[in-house]
Structure formats: structure tokens, C-alpha cells
Amino acid sequence: MSLDKVREQILGIADQTLKYAKDLNIPSTEVFIYNLSSTNLTDNKGKVDSRDGLSLGIGIRAAIGKKIGFASTTGFDEESIKTTLNLAHSIAKTSPENPMFNGFVAETKTSKEGILDHVIPNLDAKDMIEHCNLMGQGFDSSDTRLVSVSYAVNISWGGYALGTSEGCLSSSLITTYGANSMVVLTEASDRKTAADFVLGREIKPVEGLTANAMKHGLESLGSKAFGGSEVLPTVWKSREAAPFLAFPFFSVLSGSGYVEKQNPWKDKLGEKVCVDDFTLIDDGQNPVQGACRAIDTEGTPKQTTTAIENGILKTFVFDKMYGEAAEMQSTGNATRGMGFGGGIPFESLPSVGPNQMLVKNVGKNLDEQIAEIDRGILITGTPIGLFTANPVTGDFSVTTNDAFLIEKGEVVNPLKSISIAGNNYETLKNIAVIGSDRETSGWPIDAPSMTFKGHTISD
Image (cartoon, rainbow, N blue to C red; front, side):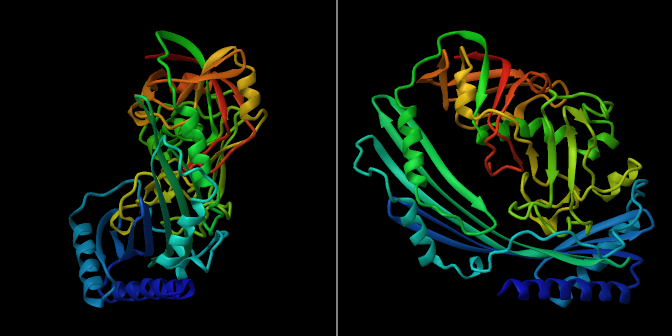
């Protein structure tokens, strides 16, 4: 099915479902229609596995005043839709009132839609195998340290529609393309895994991915023990700085936590929370990003929100209900099971979540930051345990075996597994350098390479 047909179908089903709801005398209804096709192909040692997937269904919220009921169903047949409408209505009748609820989105307004690659829905397994072959060009497959190499290509296309009895009827489409290559290398007793990837809304060049992964993996062999415990600066590559910052920002910028007074930054609006050079934007309107949509999953137009500017907390991000409860407004941040956190969208209620958070580029690139370190640690892989940090105090302790020792401005040697401990909130005030080299991370936050002061490093 073409993308145009997908849009026509989901809007038609949303409109028809609202007509059914009116016939059933449901006072207020919101329907969320979801239709996403995907193909995932992996090539591991010549063994190819290709799997197609289709996620389609409807999530329905029925409201009686401030009482809300929710139900969902797969498929789009008339009987299932009417049964689901009746179930949501009956749940609403017996539900307690939600004092924060003031109705569903009442207008059909849209923002900018992201890039759509109309070739992606037509890719087949043969095409994707060719992409795997392209990934494998340009590296030495005869290297005796190479244990295995694998490739993966993932594509998806489709979208969602949102309709309410108050007058909203709109939709948003997406296409995505991802490719990655992973190598496993061994030398003596040292074993390393390394990977490289591309990700976007349209087909990306994949040549050189395996060669890049191989280069990083070979550089990581021959690791040595750190040998003790020491407070040192840490330098994080762009793709590693992003997930490191994810935990504090996903929690402290949520408007739901602000309203419910569970947010550690609930009293810090207008105050300095980061260093002066730090600016963080939640961007739902950059057309190359997967988060760029015409509407969020309640029907509110997505937007670009500056959450932190020059170190000052300017705002939280909100969906409709929490925005109104805070006497503000929605920032277009309603999400349903998509992106970070997962879940099946049409089976999920709306919640507050990030679009694509972007740390603004500032100054020095990675090499320039390393050159300024007398003694420190370079982080080149995502540590384990990032999301085990204490959400109240911000204390964290993570481990990684993707790190290098820096001495006198030079990368000296790879390290065996080390732990990195500190405090997330103090770390934001101890940023030494914000880099100039932001890359796509695959997380709902992208950041340039960064140098932090005062982390405790130990074996």
C-alpha cells in the first residue's frame, strides 16, 4: 500500500469511527488510528533472516464529563470498532473523575510533516541484501582477529490519524531507514564488539559501516586494567554523550512530573540548572528527524520548544492535559508507546514524552577536547546502567568496557571494564566543554561530544 493510500485509509477509519460513536450516543470520543508496516533483515555469517511486520489498530477514549474510559482493538472491521467504542464508554461510566481532564483536542491544525521517502515502501528483501553487501565493502575480512560480522537493515512506513468528536481530524505519516554492521574481534584473552550505523527518514549511504566498526574494534583490543580509583574528567563521543544525558532530561523536563510535584526540578523554572553555554531544544519540527510530525498523538501540532537556554530552565514539555493543569498549554509532546520506552501505540494512553531533544553545538570537536586533557577517560561506547540512576538525588554508577585512558592530550590505551560514578545534576553544572560535532544517536536526544569534570573512575 502506498503512503497516500495509508493516509486516506486511516483518516477514513477515524471519521467513520466518530460517526459510529455519535450513533451510539457517546458524549465525547477520541479515536487514534495506527498503521505501520516494517521489514527487518539480518545477515549473520551468510544466514539471512527477513521478517515483515504490520501493526494496526485503534485506541479509543470515551469521556463523560471528566470521566474517561479507554479500550483498544486490532484491525479495522466494523464490529470490532463498535465493540471497542461501547467498552470504552462503559469504562468511562464507572471511572472516577479526573479533575485535570478538560476534553480532547478540538481543532484540526497541523505543523510541518517530516521527509517521506516513497521508495522505502517498495524495498524488498533482495534490495536489502544488496544494502548489506554494500556495508561489507572496504574492510579486511581475512584479519585473523575477526570472529564474526553481521549486518541489519530495518525499514518502516505508515502513520497515525487522530479524530475527536470536538472537531479534530488529522494525520501524520513517517518513513524510516536504519542500517548497522557489527563485528566481534578477539586477541589473546581480549574480546571486543564494535558497530556503526546510519538512521533517518530516508535511505542513507551505507558504504564503510563495517570498515568503521572494524577500525574501532581493532583500536579497542589490548585493553589494560585501570588500576585503582580516581576522580577524573571524562570525554564522551557524540553518540555516547546523548544517552548519558537522556536519563536526567527525560525525567526533569516532563510536565507531568512538574504538575504532580514529583519532578526534581519542579521549583527551578527560571533558575540556572546547567553551565552558561548549555542550550537544549525539544524539536518536533526538524524534517530529517523521526520526531518531526504534523501532529502529536493527541492531535496537537508539534513544535520546537527551547527547554533550557544558556543554562536557564525555561519550560517543561507538556501534553494537553498536563499543559492545561499547569496553566500553560501543550507543547506537542503527547506520545503513545513510540520511540523511547516502546509499547504498542494504539494500546497505549497518551503520556508526556520527548520529541527529539537537541543539545546545541558550541565549540571544540572531540580531538580538540582530548588534546586539553592532562589525565582523563574517553568514553566510546554506551555504558551499562544509565537508567539505574536515583531519580531524586541524581546519583549514578555505570560500567563500560568501551573506554580509553587519556594522558597529556593523547589517547594512551584501551581500558578493561571500569565504573563511572557521579551525580547527574551536578554533572550538568560541571560541563567543561560542549562540542561542535553532534551526530544522530538513535535516542530521542542528540548531543555533541562533551567533557565533564569530577567523575569517579574505578576498576
